[in-house]
Image 1 (cartoon, one colour):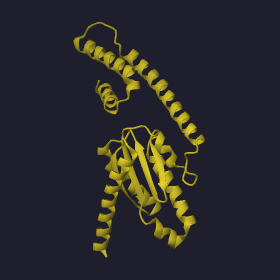
Image 2 (cartoon, rainbow, N blue to C red):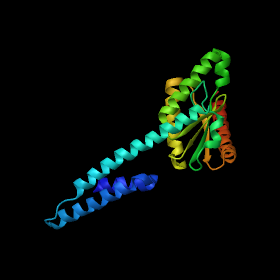
Image 3 (tube, rainbow, N blue to C red):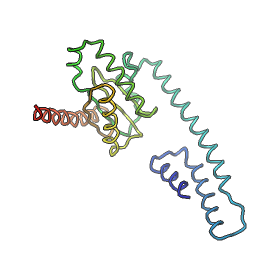
Image 4 (cartoon, one colour):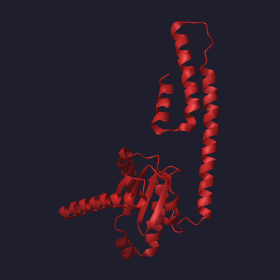
Amino acid sequence: MILVIYISFIVYVKRLLEYVFPVSFLLLTGTQTFYVLATGLPNELMIPYGRLVFLISLATTTLTKFKRIAARHEVLAKENVLDHLTGAFNRKVIEQLPKGGVLILIDIDGLKKINDTYGHIYGDKLLQRFSEIVKKDIRQEDYFIRLGGDEFCIVSNSISEKDVEHIMNRLYNRCRNELGVGFSYGFAPFDNFDKAYEQADEKMYQMKEEKYRSNKKGV
């Protein structure tokens, strides 16, 4: 029952409407089973049927969802919305973004210095590896976009604002460990791109200023 209630809670919080029926059926059969066991009635336990319906619905719904996502990405690729260097989306995809969720603006630290020191080929490989790390860390339905140069953004309906810091700290640590570089970021609710970009850029600038002051003190 605890597991059934937890699953129901996740579906409600994440607003996974396509899973409402199987989870509701599972919850009802779980409640019936709990009641029968608690009262000692000779009725048949319904939880096996609820579990079967839940698993079948879960499998079919998830498969349909992934097929829809794959088809959407294929269409976007055909419309030339991918950045050829990194494999991220380019600016052309912005007009097609669904509203809602959060926009996270990301700027790699010190890429100009890296290009000047090691050359642009090395810098391009770093951008490619950075993109691979980010794409592995986000969900398939999220949008990872290269805005230009070393500036990227993530637009996601699956990330809440309160989770951004935790997710970005995890991503930052991966980049530091695997690439030896970090990044600055800012975020804002996503409804209008220009407005969200302006708000996120302001937060990102504040982070850059804090890093600059910290580095200055450390010198």
